[in-house]
Length: 124
Image 1 (cartoon, rainbow, N blue to C red):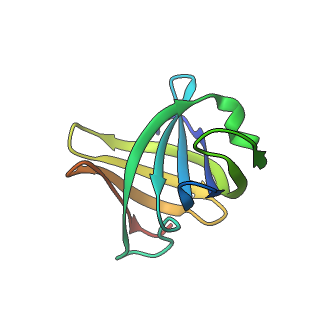
Image 2 (image 1 turned 90 degrees about the horizontal axis):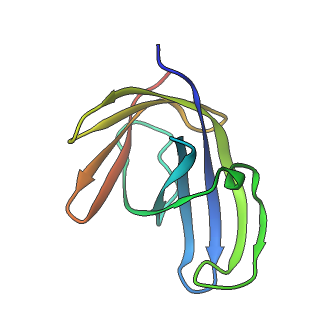
């Protein structure tokens, strides 16, 4: 079994970008980040398309509140958080097992066109 790492999903109501969800995964001392227009899927069969964002500092794991300036200005609250582990990682697919309050079970992140697909593959 691989190490369990932290994750957070922020519900971000940005003034310019509008409502979206930021999936942030702890990796090598930073948070890897993907933005999705809709909430992450909680059941098998629903896919979400997202765009990779710049890495964030680990302090974002606990952040909730108001961002006052810049493109991301707006309110942010934690939609889900917990731990995850990498089940499989190749150039074509990343399979993750989540242990959150809402994200539970195996999910896949895979490059698709100019972004990424994120979907649930197995329940716990």
